[in-house]
Image (cartoon, rainbow, N blue to C red; front, side, top):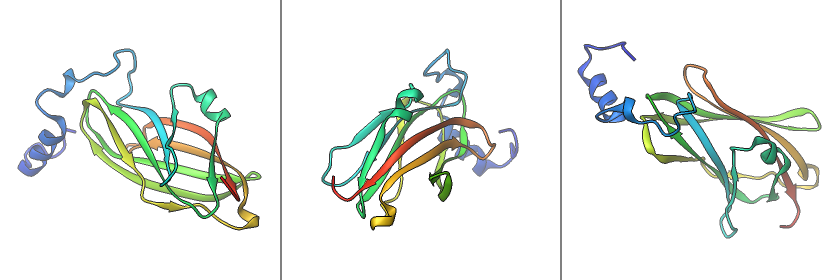
Length: 165
């Protein structure tokens, strides 16, 4: 983050992200990561939010998000940023069925300065596939990474497309 030290607009941008004393912002002293991803929540209008804590990835892999075919949904991620700025944070997921990748998407989350408060990002509205051939279980491999290719968290979970809730 020392590049462009003579650039006044870049200095203002960094000051906006960092605040007054970024090195003092440590959420978890025992966790050396800059980004600590805490949870993923499935948001469907008219339905109760389904939240998965990502602290225990074994439990996450055993749980299934159920979606009614054709419904519109969003995903919300909650995370902490500590110690320094993270630039170009992004969420990538690869969806496969029967071992064949059927979808890969990348969502730009943004750049964040350290804060003691939980931060969040919500994806744009997506539509679940519909029709008899699309019903079934899908394995989703998710990753939070950034412009510097840091792997902040990689986890696997399952979603199931059904005819009815």
